[in-house]
Length: 323
Length: 263
Image (tube, rainbow over all chains, first blue to last red; front, side, top):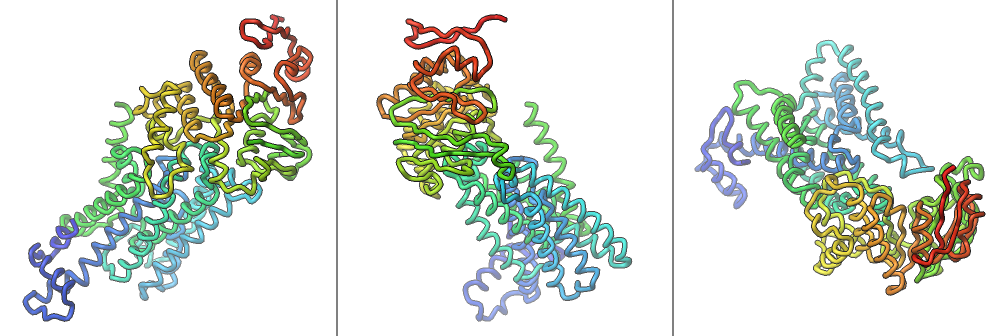
C-alpha cells in the first residue's frame, strides 16, 4: 500500500525505482546514488515518504483513539472528537492564523495542540468531582461536558472567522485537513505518540474489556476504575490532539474504523486495538492517495473521508442492525 | 475468612452527613462456612452494605476488616482474590460472548499481556456447566434474556473463586428451577469449601430456607441479626415491612415460612 501510493502522484515513478531508492538509501546513505534519477530521489525521500508515513500514522492514531473513547464512554457512537478536542484544536489554530503566526509553520500545530489540551482539561475539570470521582467520570457527565465546551468553542471559532477577513479561507482550509507538505519531524512526532499510545492501551486492554461489565463488576474484579479511566481518557485525547494539530480535523476514521473492525473481531480490545490501528492506516492512506493521485484536483482529506466513509457506514449500520 | 464491621457509617452525600445516612453505626461480623441473608425494604441499605464490603464505596466513618486487615489497605488485586460479587446490574455494553464474560472472572489471576491459561479456561468451563449455560457459550450476551444473563454473571463470580461471595439479588430474574440450582451450588460450597456467602433477598421464604443467619435492615439500621430460626417472627416483619403475616415452621422445607393474608 505504502509503495503503491509512493508511486502515484503527478510524477509517476515506477515501483522498481522506488524499491531501489529505499533499499540503497537504507543500506548505505553515503554511497553514490548517481544511478538513480535525482528528481525521483528528492520526490520520494523529501516529499512523498514523509507525507505518506504521517498519513498512515495519523490513521493509526485516530483509530486507536476511537477505540479508547468508545471503550471508556461505553458508547459505540463516541469518537476522538466527542470531548471537544477538535473544537479546541481548531480554536487554537484559528488564533495562531489570525495573529499571523502561520508563516513560521510550527506555531499553528503548536497552538492547535495547546488548544486541544486546554479543552480536555476544561472538560475533565467540569465533570470531575473530588467528592464522588466515580460518578463524576461517568460517560454521561463527560459527554455532556464535551458538548458544552465544544459549543462554546464553536461560537468562538465563528467569531474568529468573522474578524479574520482575508485570512478566513486559510482557517477554513486548515480545518478541513490535509497531508500536503508534511515533513520528517511530523513523522517522528506521530510515531512517538503512536508507540506510547499503543503500549498504554494494550497495557490496559483487559481492564477496558472489564469496564463494559459496568463499574461495579469491573471494580470487584480488581480494576482501578478511576486511574484506568483517567489514563485512557488522557491518552485518547492527547492522541486526537496530535492528529488534529498535524493534519487538521479528519472526521469519521475514529468512529468508523473501530466500529467496522468490531463486526469482524468482536469487542475484545486485545484484538480490536491492533486491528483497528492497521485498518485506520490503510483507510486513511487510501483516502489520501485518492485525493492527491486519482482526483484531478487535490480536495481536503477530511471532506473525502466523511463523504465516502459516511455512506459506507450507513450501509453497514443498516445491514447489521436489522438483519 | 472473617469479615468484621466496626461502627460502620455511610452516606452518599458526605456534606449532609449525618443527615442522609444510608448505613448507621453498624457493628457485627460474618464468619466463614455460613450463608448469611440480608433482608429489608427498598432503600434500607442492603446493596450499600455489600458495596462497602467489597471496597466499591468507602465508609465515612468506621472500619471493615477481612481477617483483621482493613479493606481500604488491601490492594485491588488482593481484594479481587478475596471477594467476588454477582450484582443486580447485569447490563453489558458491548456484544461479548458468554464464554468471554465468564473468563473475565479469572482477571485477577491472569498476568498482564498473557492469555488465560488452560486452568483458567477449565475453571470457566466448569462454572458454565454448573450454571447450565454451556450451550449458550458462543451466544452474544446482549441477545440473552435477563435470567440467562444473570446466570452468566453468576458463573463469572464463581469463576473468580473467592472465599467470600456476595450476591446482590443475583436470582431476581431467574426461574425457580435455576434459582434452586444456583442456591444448591452456593450452599454446597459454603459447607464443602468453608465459603462465606452474603446474599440480598427479597423473597423471605427463600432467605429463611437457605441461609444460616439473617440480617434485617431498615433505614440503615440493624433491626435483627442472628439465626434465621430466631430472627424471623411476625413482629419483626410487621415492624420492618409494615405487613401482617403468619410465620410458621414448615416440616417440608425444614425452616420457617411466611404467609401473607389478602387485605
